[in-house]
Length: 281
Image 1 (tube, rainbow, N blue to C red):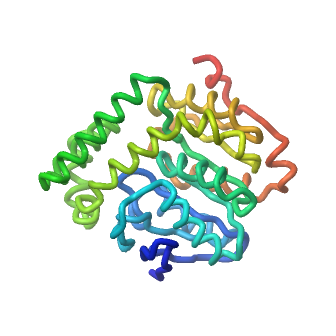
Image 2 (cartoon, rainbow, N blue to C red; image 1 turned 30 degrees about the vertical axis):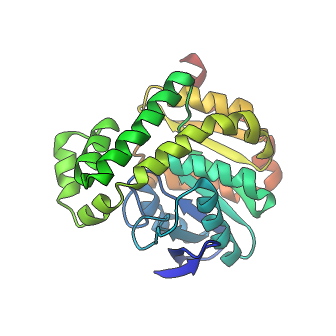
């Protein structure tokens, strides 16, 4: 992998594959460039796009020397956009989807369009309070060196069964996952910021947005998708049938390819719902 220095001097590792319009992939919690749905998309998209797959700060081969902030994560993406020639499409998964939307609001026309897969959203003060408590607990566990306990708890929370957790932790990704445990508090802070985004920043995202969700995922994702669609000026939505939060890359890739290949006018003017279940729940 190559690396670039972000604005604060942090080295961000990335790789570029393929040719065509630039597309930056943004991972979610406990994922990095070599592990998760996002990495699986690279060979499926690189025949039509210049795909930039990177390790978010504190993951994989990217550094995390300076104090973390959302603004710094956006600066990391901005540095990658500069390498791409000054503009790029964004695809983000889960917390990475929220980060993609925040980046689109902050960077304006440097982001051509954004596809966001199940971005998390706090629905009220109870969710915000629970998230703040989670951040405190995450920090306590990592300060005590209990990284393995933290990521195991998180895996159970997102629905992984015991067998899958054991298989994942027995894989070549074990050390990388344990090292990423401190980044879970970063994801929680992104979640905490989504309420502010909805109130003050969503209207700034005038670029085309595609909000994606599954009908077999967490119970709240379709409600979140509907709220975001109402808040974002140029959003279209899609509910993918029969998938969970860990959507199969081979199913997702053609959907992304079709969206990013559309003319700008088509992406921004069409608001479509490809499953009535979104509004029936």
